[in-house]
Amino acid sequence: QVQLVESGGGLVQAGDSLKLSCVASGRTFSSYHMGWFRQAPGKEREFVAAINWSDDNTYYADSVKGRFTISRDNAKNTLYLQMNSLEPEDTAVYYCAAESDSGEYTYWGQGTRVTVSS
Image (tube, rainbow, N blue to C red; front, side, top):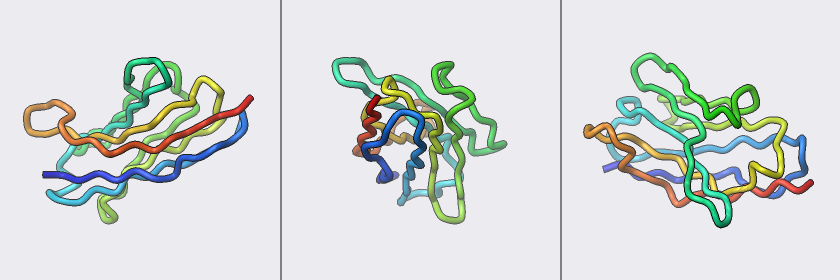
């Protein structure tokens, strides 16, 4: 089992930056592929970014590429999402997730809300 707790959300203006954190507990953090997802009001949850546990390769949705950076600190069991040049369209609840051995994102945090005003 893995428990995930996100933090760092808030209300910002367009063009501002925020850094989200996700602290993991339970099984060895460094053994999991990790990802960030978001769900905007009235929309389905969508993929934002992911990072491999083995080689730290990163992947991004086209909508955030060049503005967001995913990273991890295995010593602190923490996943990060640095978000720059925020846009109103980035307004959503952001969730971190961890893959299980099945290859699916099985473990989810409770989410942290990001609101970007224009």
